[in-house]
Structures are given as structure tokens and as C-alpha cells.
Image (cartoon, rainbow, N blue to C red; front, side, top):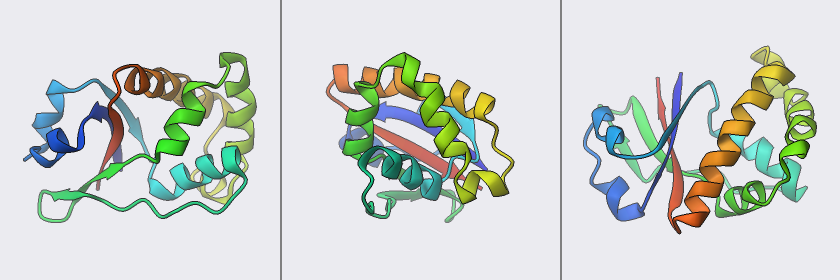
Length: 135
């Protein structure tokens, strides 16, 4: 499963017609970071039940979805101290979803360091963070 995170406005996202259109946005490429895992990550920060992430557009005959990332997650993550990322990765790696996918603290720390950078960039640019999830 491909999961590409990118910074854009909702208007720009609605203009995306195919996967190659992502080339015009800052992108963080990842694998297997689907919406349920993002919801568990947000729950680590808020300690509350989080809303289901719904797609705002489908691409490629229902095999790819464009989903906005929760503003709470982006904002919380953008103010995180870099030295806290390993602790968050350790907690996240113990969730059922990552245990089933054999997610390691090392791999998740690497991803979260990159996610931190793109989250901060989206806040600085006053834009949203989205993910394209493709099978």
C-alpha cells in the first residue's frame, strides 16, 4: 500500500486527476501508513477517540483516495520537540495495527521525523496536509 503525504489546499486537491499530479506538491512517500494508523497516532496525542478520516476525492477507479490529515494531528505534531519523536514511535509501534504489520520503532521514528518536517511546513505555509492512499 502506497501512502504519500503532501501539502496543498483543498482546492488544489480537488484539481488532482491522477497520481502524477502530486509532483507539483511537497511529498513524503511512505508505505502502509493507512488511515487507521493515523487515527491511532492522533489518539496518542489527544488520548480521546478521533474521527474517522474520510476521503475527499477518489482516483483511479476506486483504487486511490485523497484524505485530509486531521488538523489536530498536524498542529500537535508541528509543535512537538524532536527529542520526543522516539518516545511517540515507541508507543505507536505497540499499537495492534503496527504489531500486525511488524512495524519497528526504528522505522517509525524515521517516518515520524519526516512527518514532523512536512507537518511543520504545512503549518508555516498555512496549508493542509493530505495523504494519498493507493492499493
